[in-house]
Amino acid sequence: MNDTKSLPPLPDRLSINPKSPFHVAEVFEHNIGIRLNGKERFDVDEYCISEGWVKVSSPKALDRRGQPLLIKVKGTVEAFYS
Image 1 (spheres, rainbow, N blue to C red):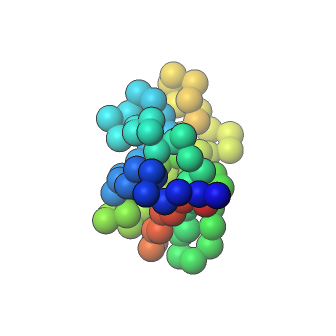
Image 2: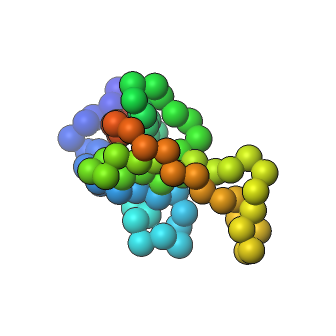
Image 3: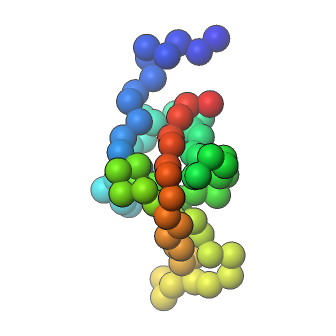
């Protein structure tokens, strides 16, 4: 049974990278879902609701530090607890 009163509010911008200033560890203690243009996405690394974009990892391309490149996809973003 989920107690919605104990869930922290979802921020406008959130990143899964712990080095990012937009990483909120308390939110990641619960399951989060992201919808982009009405379709649920499972490969989102970062999102911003107000600006309407999500960032997903490139399947093959890496940056100079060996991390996957992030591709920005624009649309209507919805974040929710699942």
